[in-house]
Image 1: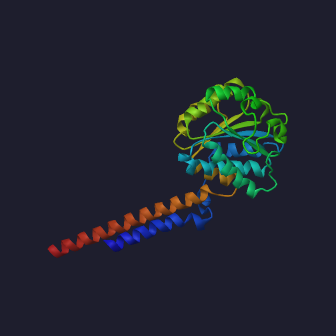
Image 2 (image 1 turned 30 degrees about the vertical axis):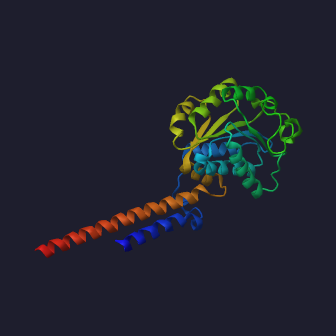
Image 3 (image 1 turned 45 degrees about the vertical axis):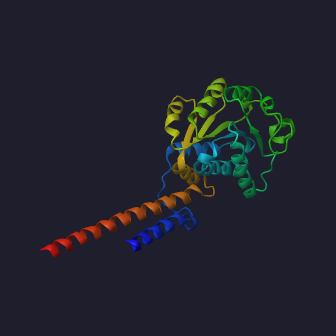
Length: 275
C-alpha cells in the first residue's frame, strides 16, 4: 500500500542520514583484525624524519571506497609528521591525491608543502615508468606537480634520489594488476618495505603476494578502513559509513519482520472468515 511504501522510503532515508549524526558509534562493536593492527603500528612507529612514497593508483570509479582509506592513512602519517612523496600511475589519480592532501593539510596547518610532503604528479609508461622511477626519481619526474620546481629544490627530496632512499612504499589501488607491476618492477629489485591498501574486491587477488612476503602488509575495504581508524585514532569517516550500513540492515530486518507478521495475521483472518 502507498502508506507502507512511504514509511519504507522514510526509514531508508533516515538510515542514510545516520552517518551525519552518529559520529562512528559502530566503533563499539569493531574488533580490529591483527593485520590492520600490525599495519597501523608500522605507520605509528615510523620516525618523524622518515619519508614514505604514497601512490594514488586508483580511478574516480572507486573513489567512494578508496578516498576513505587514503584519508585515514594520510591523516595518520601527517599527524605523525612523517614525510610523504605522493604520485600516481593513473592520470586521474593526481587529482584524487590533490583532494586528499588539501583536506589533510587544512587539518594540519603545520604540515607544509615542499618541506613535509610533495606531489610529484603522473608517471606514465606502466612497467617502463616504474623501472625508471626505481632507478632515479629525478629522471622520472623533472619537476613536481604543484609548484613546477626541480625535485632537488624541495627540502623533503634532499637525500631522496631512488626508491631505496625511502622508508616505505604504500600503494593505494583498485587494480590488482597495478600492484603486481609494482611488485615485479620495484619490490623484486630492491629491499624497501611495500604495503598495499586496496578495494575489498581486489584484496583476495593479492593475498598470495602477502603470503610469499612480496607485500609486507595488505588492507582493504570499508570494514578494514574503519578498523584502521579505530586503531590509529584518526578522524573517522569509514566508521560513519558503517553506522549507515548498520542502520540500513536494521531497517531491512524490521521491515521483514513486520511485513511477515502482517502477512500471517491476515492469512489467519482469511481462514477465520472462510470458517
